Length: 149
Image (cartoon, rainbow, N blue to C red; front, side, top):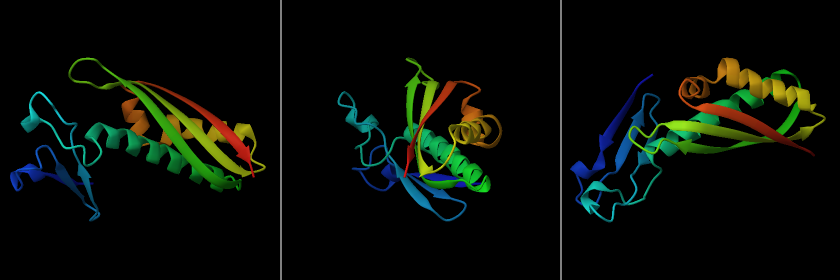
């Protein structure tokens, strides 16, 4: 896996702390920093997600992917799945994640709670590389709600 991240400020005076990521699969995405009123030249313009937001989003995507796939492989009638991640970060640099809570919302037809619990646990303990990696530094908790459709 590879990715190239380039500072966009090198080509545009107004870009400040914007970055363009180009993935090995040919996709691109922007990142930007928060505005800094005290030192505008050091801040971003809030035009794109922060890098740490993308790390959190990637973790949610990785785990939600696992949960849906595990439920589908179990022949459950899953119709929807989302996960809301809330986090806490250290107060000082490096401002790593210290706590992450992943709240899953699953919709489907006839899915037992035990199947959803199992899918989340399997993702958390075995399959989701992102959450397992972050779990080495942060306390990760999970929960879910289920809506029958």
